[in-house]
Length: 337
Image (tube, rainbow, N blue to C red; front, side, top):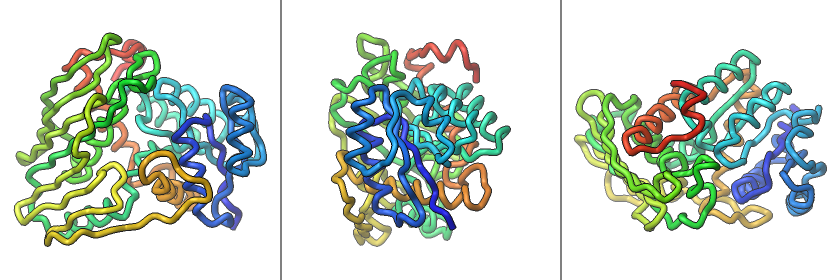
């Protein structure tokens, strides 16, 4: 069977790490064939570093490239919708970095369009494909934790210098950048959407959040307490607590270790990539790449691990938190939930 032919849109840090991760997968299954960036020189350097045969200035050439099957969208948040829709119009499958879009209305529009086109489209919530997350779901499914009562999750890193986080014009703020991870792990544990949300936040001079705290109330009385910060480094763990015990995911957004019910620390080492990744455990992006290939080969339009309904639910929670703490984006006036 022919390998899945990938193009990468943007030549930034996360795109670099995605290329590194794909290099750890069999070349018979995955090939990086093209990269597009806003500057031709950046695209050329990226292609040279990662052994990619074609590089382009801008993104339109990726859409027109007949040898591209699927596009990894690693741009800043506020152009995810535009770039992804362009690629879908050209008949390309999509793996788009989180958050899929800036709000729920925009995400719904994009996912509806992907389904109309008969193309695979997934928000790149890579966390859910780590073996640690698979183990957690299996434990919960077997009833090993009993009834899930609480999730405690914090995600904080000093990021106020990072433009994509601090600038409203780029779809910034911790709700969209970090909060997606805290929300998704709570939903992964409860396997449902929250029925009530209470949130408070701290905003910067640009009117985006540099930190939030929120309580998500789930059906049956379950509660998730989440916290994000772009100012302070937080414990960055997710603790899933049930009536029979708890499991802790360490570095929960990309966990290669967890503390199991009996206190045992389980480790899931990652392979080394040909070129070194920049961000923590980014070789783990290989898991979502493999899931993308698996679903496309099966003719499926979404993954059950990050389904379209999951992405819409997560976006809805983000919208609700932003509304409560007073963060508005231009897209909120164009794409209504």
